[in-house]
Amino acid sequence: MLLLLKLMRPKQWIKNLFVVAPLVFSMTFYDSVNVIHTIIAVAVFIAASSAVYVMNDICDVKADRKHPKKKHRPIASGEVSVPTAMVLLVALVCAGIYGIRFLPINCAVITTIYILLNIFYSFKLKHIAILDVSLIAVGFVLRVLMGAAAISVDVSPWIILATFLLALFLGFGKRRHEVTTPSGNKTRSSLNEYTAELLDNLINVTCAAALMCYAIYAVDVARTTHKVEFVYTVGFVALGLFRYLHFIYVSNKGDSPENAIYQDRLFLLNLLLWLGISLRILLP
Image 1 (tube, one colour):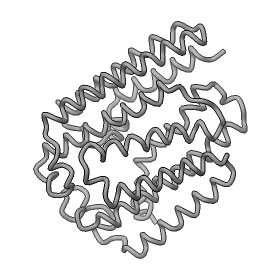
Image 2: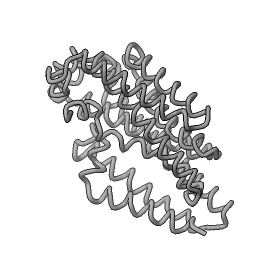
Image 3: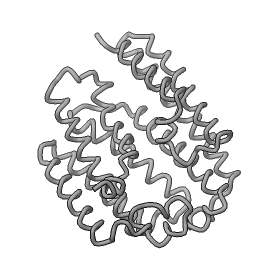
Image 4: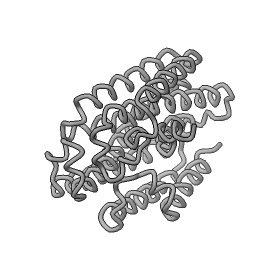
């Protein structure tokens, strides 16, 4: 049972908190129906994303066995058989379909797009440099749109852009770690199309652009809500981005964004302060 849970990569579930963002920043969490719909939307995306992880591990089993870290994954190590993984995959898809019944139809469309996108990614598109990271970033945008669709609210285009650029930043940071690790080029063909210099430029551009988009979003929120203090939250976002740059270039931890959140106290504290202060400012 624990091996099946490991196959679903629960550490990665933190990414699905992006589904909650529309509920928080639309300030509609006082509505119990919205809260329930958001919880269901998160559960559906956990099922969908876990199904994608299982599918990826089935497709990449041969390559994973050559990777110094991925060879310890349940399928690559032989602890979970491919037929068992297929049963889990079907169960996760069924769970997602069941949950989606309780949400607006747009949620079903978004979830379907997410799964189809990842199918194309797994079988072909992950081998194309730049496009591989871009498709992962689109997955984060779909999470935000899922949360918005679940509670029928609009999302600022600036927060959509900020989400997309932030995901690109994290993705290019991960690719840089893989490119500068000798074993990386043996397990992912798209890495042959990247260089450390190219990735450095992409990281810098997406970092700056993500910060700029969030700053514009913060100014827009301050203007529409008449709460000028919200602009100050840009400082926390800047600190978080700069801290992650430190992970990439100094600590050599750019391969795992989730570990940065779980293990780095300063990063986690900054994240909690940003969330807490943002809510305090926006609350009536």
